[in-house]
Picture 1: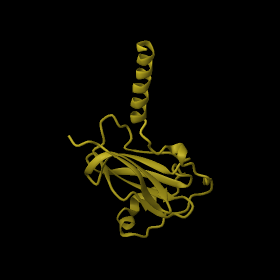
Picture 2: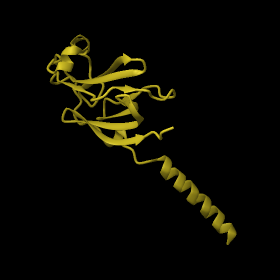
Picture 3: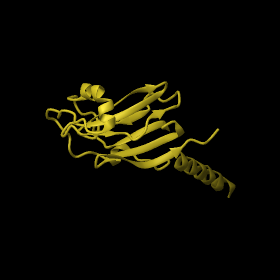
Picture 4: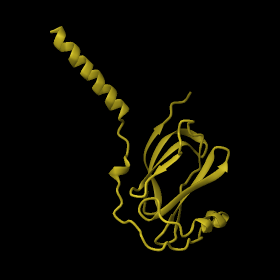
Length: 157
């Protein structure tokens, strides 16, 4: 009986450990884009007060090839020490979509605080949003808005 129980117990421990480690998080492959833009990118549209504040930067980005969600150019730039702000420009329309917060304070082992793919609509944000909290946040660009899919908060020290 003991010979059968030990392997079963080890298998159970491995399964429980694996299910905890593989927490159900959105994956890029779960959200493929159907529409990949290949034409000439539209000129950026400066509409909002924030767009006007960063119009020089947005004009510099205008016309670049899409690198996110099929037809968006997504980019970030510094807004202070270990702080970035992020924007997506629609290559089809020129419309601007801002990530509604700045990102800062990501862990030292994180190479890119914002992860994304051209062929998929989610982004993965590592760090703090507007200098509050911290963790890993999964957003998806839907109807010109970044919608939170899942948040995995970092435990408080």
